Image (cartoon, rainbow over all chains, first blue to last red):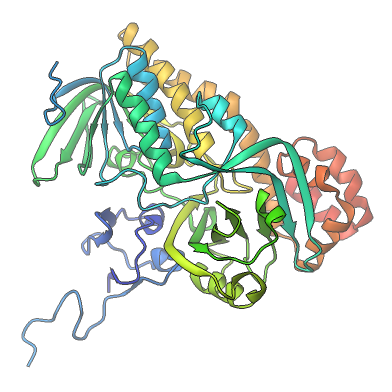
Length: 71
Length: 406
């Protein structure tokens, strides 16, 4: 699953963008935007993050990407 | 040429992407040389968020052509105090004084200088990608604060867009940092710190693998009780987040921080790997963090970025005068930069590789066998043979040094 950024934790440092080998991340305003098509699931950004703001997108009710067809 | 600050032309001599210290120094120098210069900055306010330890040596100010300004040179610094793991601190006064900089104000002052010389600033505008035609960079596509996509064209584009370096990536130059080559950083600005006022005249550095693997913790004082307190750790060597290391250290040092108040939270990434070997293309140059031009031992990048900016601006002006924006011509920028700074940084890189191998016990040993001058010289990578001699007192350290200094 591609990563997602938690804007509550993110300090907009851009380091994850700089290490992403797939050019899948972008710092837009103060938020990290993930291009889920490009993300190759390598977790490099997660290993860098100084505040643990990145995590794998969960297969559950997401905060950022709510699941469709949820009963 | 329109002088309305709200109106921007479509064609310039030079477009600079990013209004950090590198970008604005490049803009100032280009404008001063009579070049029509546009700076495009994605942030809505220069200087924020701060992603910087905020220390700057006076020598760098000379290189950058900057004079002392009390609005951003907030505290004069006489040297460094290093605390090895056993806490037997080493005070290192230096003749080369420096300043702790209020970065938020610093960036604005630099932009003001550039603006007075005639450079235009377009804020809250995000460069989407560079325009490349017939193998040449011809400008950029940017999205403004209305969400409008617009083309801005120039003879030369200078990418000063920081560690993320998106503009270079957009034309296929690989500026991705390997995880091993990037420091993960986190910082607080804190006030009401309990510290000996004399110590605040030095940058305070704590080293050790327990507290900051592959990096260090710092306190850079802006006044007698207010400091930028931060950490950089190697992204591969760390076992928890930079923030967790820093929080733990602050908690374990109540003698300083018991009654302190946090007034800012910030962080950053410091590229400490090798600089980009060819930071140029047809019609294109990359400066500062975007080209990984940073001192790998302490992570300082402002001075180096401004120096690279001056070289880039000079070469841009020559290129425009001669109407030659080819990569062959612009390679002069890289040539001069590597000669002026790059080669030295590669030597410093070796010192970093050496220091990264040291255990806490060895850091303490190093503290015993090196005096203040020795530590300074070592970090400047001035004379390896001398250190190999000194390190003979500790065969383990000597072996590691021989390997790293090759």
